[in-house]
Length: 185
Image 1 (tube, rainbow, N blue to C red):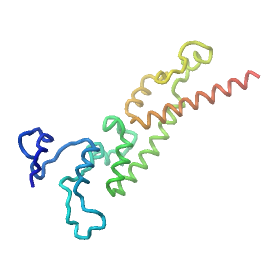
Image 2 (cartoon, rainbow, N blue to C red; image 1 turned 60 degrees about the vertical axis):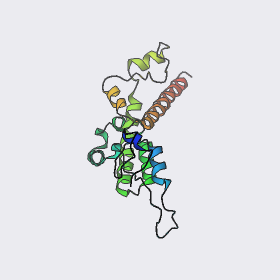
Image 3 (cartoon, helix red, strand yellow; image 1 turned 120 degrees about the horizontal axis):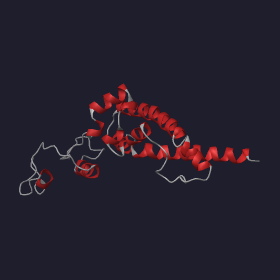
């Protein structure tokens, strides 16, 4: 079945969209199209069929899932999607993918431990002493005193992991400041 007025989605505005055409669309649009004519859940015959279907995005391809199974720490999630976990959570809402859910849970747990470890180490050494002595580095949001391998680590984190890193780093710093203030008395 051809769909008139949707050819522009396939870079052919003057033609209808052909049946079976695969398109990369924003998730919100793909969802709307897939659900537009879907049969209601109580329709046993399924008379109304959707004219679009959803597939898992490239960020959650078999290659990525296999790499996550092998070693979640070796995959730069940000290269797949800046909002990898948010995308994955939405896909799990739409698809019944038990194996994918298990892989993502394991990935999250292992990577969260690494995030916490790096957050605890970030800004240590001279940068931390300089802050403690009242020198520059007032603890601004993104200037965490991370260099070298730490920067490479941060580069691979998705937005949720980066937020977790900031919170863990700020909590560690606040804990150290508190302990230092107690020692003075």
